[in-house]
Length: 202
Image (tube, rainbow, N blue to C red):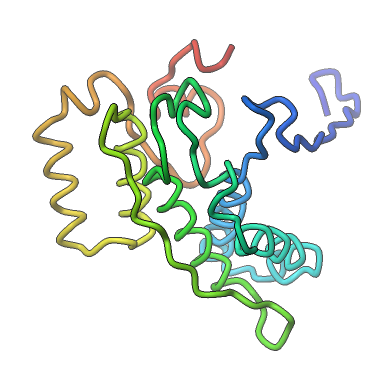
């Protein structure tokens, strides 16, 4: 309902990479969908949504795509040199944030898939190919933080990373906000908590 109490119909339009750079499907959004679904289930203890056939099918479709033969060479995971020209400029290989997000999504999917069905999660070796040259520290930092959130690394490694961030704050963070919040924020609250940047809303 809008301000005049009139019914407003909203719809979602699927984007299969048509509006992205290089028209590459955004696999990370699929990973985040699985991760956020697990967060919802754990927070509410309501498994009915995750157990719906449509949701189970959606998880399976994402897994079938990202666990298929040759997926590690797709531009969804593998970043060719200067493939994005913005956030991954001059990065070649498998950025750490993609590896950590991939691991996070697989663990979340395993938590929600129903037993006794046709669900199969193959063991997958996450490549350790991270290019240290011309590093974009925003993504370096994001990848390590996702690795901490997903328990991909040990508690000792997590403490070392956080100590490094604190010690090199000006070089790694500067004035960039680094906040992850749950549950989702609404209205002006998210601007205050996360560090509102007007250029990101244009």
